[in-house]
Amino acid sequence: MAAETSKLMSIDGKHTAMNCAASEKVEGSRPGLLSLIEPIVPEQFMSEYWCVRHLLIHRPISSLQGFLKSLLDMKIKDMLRYAEDPVIVMHMTTDGRYRGSRVSKSQALNFFESGMALYFNLSSFFEDTREWTNLLAGDLGQLQSRCKASLFITPANWTTEQHFDPNENFTIQLRGHKRWNIAPNQSVRHAVDRFTCSDDAIPPRMSTYYFYKNLAPPDSTCSEEMMPGSMLYLPRGHWHSVESLTESVSLNFCVVPETWASFLTPIIERLLTTSPELREVVNGAVGPALTRAAAFERLREILPLLSRLIANVRPEQIFPEIAGIPALQSLSPDTPIMRNRLATLVCDPGDQGAKATITLHNFLGSMPSFAFFGSQPGAASPAGNETILLTQEQVTVLEWMMEQDAISLREIKSHFSQLTARKIDDFVISLITTGLFCC
Image (spheres, rainbow, N blue to C red):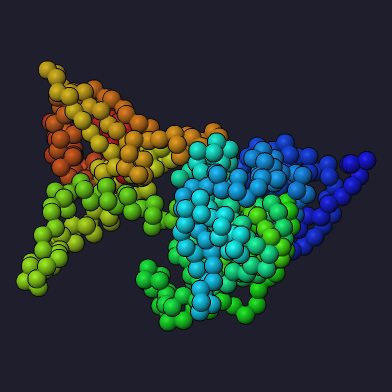
């Protein structure tokens, strides 16, 4: 009989009937992306929705599993036991602005009972929270540290003003009903800052990529209603306001996605520290005008070096395990060969040559870690240490190559004319294979 009953599923506001046999698949799914978006499959979600448009799915509250289900009947005071300090109390200021203030979790219940909304992260010591956030981050190809689980508890008739956030959000309605008013952001693409309509001014960082004085939400929005069991995915930067039609509890998985700017920042820092000039102490950047003038002149000398270092970065240096090993025939005599500055070399000299240990570092400039790459089933971790034995001839060639910004096979063979072309070819390919050099 149960298999004949039906429920409503809503995707982007379009409702279709789906029998409860399909909902059994949800209950059997492991925590992570698939449990949130079924019947959409992850491949479709990543290609059609992720970072692009919102997705609303209605499911019966009974389909929730694991710690999601354990939250359903939990009292608010017990939920606060799992909160990380501080708790954000959402309130309206005397001049009608929507703001958040930090309080200790021991005080939070009093504020809620006086008519204010609560927002807090669930403690990472809560094992089920860690399992969900780690698996969700892995499914999305994001760092686990950038995924948080939080609860939003609001009294009836609570309304947020129009705003947008710099994170991707998956919201599951646990109790009560909410109405979301949503619109894509046509003014700010790929926002990395939060903005609320009542803000006095554009936030300082946002002013570097949004150049106008005023920023207003669009006149037209899409209205979506959430009931217990509903899941709403909202891309970062989308305008939204939320009305709590009844007292409401929502679980939110917030993902602060890696941007190219945040991804490349530690790489650039690591590259700059390879230069003795850029490791100098900055003298005079703060102080009297004369002192600052000296720093200005030194900066004028250093900036071209910075530009050259960054200009020489290649994808093969950052993802050597993806780039693969070039075949010898793909190396023309004049192909530029550059040192991978994200790899380190330690030579242990011996009587006949040396033992060389090459260490490839991941994009954070540390030893490769399974914490990120291993979170995805079947994902390969980049190589770590590799040791090769060098003859005295090879040590001489390697030392010379390490001193050059960029070289070619032709230049190496010209400089070491006493060695056969085959010996140089084989040695250079072996160095590229280890990731110490790239072309």
